[in-house]
Image (cartoon, rainbow, N blue to C red; front, side, top):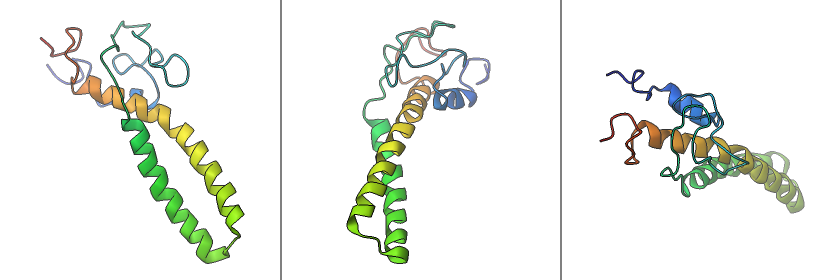
Length: 128
């Protein structure tokens, strides 16, 4: 059985990034901002065993930390603004960036768990 036949095609990762069910890609993976639905409303895939944990937050911290530290260094060397400018500018960027990254990263983490069958679930393709 190929990856596309058993529902674990690379598109499942794209669906996860978009916050959609990794199996069907038709229903939302979330109920609210970061709360994962217990089951897909369209195909019935069970999400109760899927737990993203702190992974999405850690990845968001790494991504934002690298980007903001680099940008802050460039701004400091080019413009040498007062400290309050750095605090306002980078605080807003970190807060906004964190909120923008958390949901797609959580969806991607759950899609990865679905694709690579990390949850022992008889409904999953290939599970026993």
